[in-house]
Length: 176
Image (tube, rainbow, N blue to C red; front, side):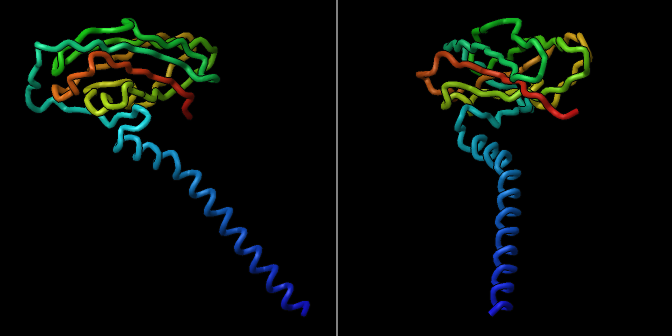
C-alpha cells in the first residue's frame, strides 16, 4: 500500500516536471511564433517587408500616398527617439529616405531594438523597407545622438482606397 502511494507520488512529480518544462518551452517559443504568424498574415501591422532593388521599381505617378511616422520609447530605455519628418507624400514605387533621431539620455551605454507596425493592416504587406534601423539592434553611448535612416517604397499594388498609412516604431530595451 505504502509502495503504491510512493510510486503514484513519483509519477505525479514526473508529470508535473514535464508540464513545467513544456510551459517554459512554450513561453520561449511564443514570441518567435507570434512574429512569424504576424509576418505571414499581416496581423498587428507587422511587416515582413524587406526588399532588395534588383530591378527598377515602376513608379505610379498617378497616385500619391501620405506616410505618417510615429515613434515611442518603452520604459527603461532612457532614449529620446523621433522622426525628423512627421510625414511624407510618396508615389507608389518611389524610393524614399527619411531620418529618425535617437539620443541616449542616460550616463551608460544602452541598446535598443525598434519594432515596426503599419496601419491600416492591409497596407503592411505593401510597405517595402530597403534599409532600416529596425533590422538590427542599436547601441548608443552615454549622451550619443544618432541619425537612423529608413529607406523604403510602397508597392504599386497598394489597394486604391488606401491614401494614407502610418508607420509606427517602438524602441524596446535590448540586451547588449
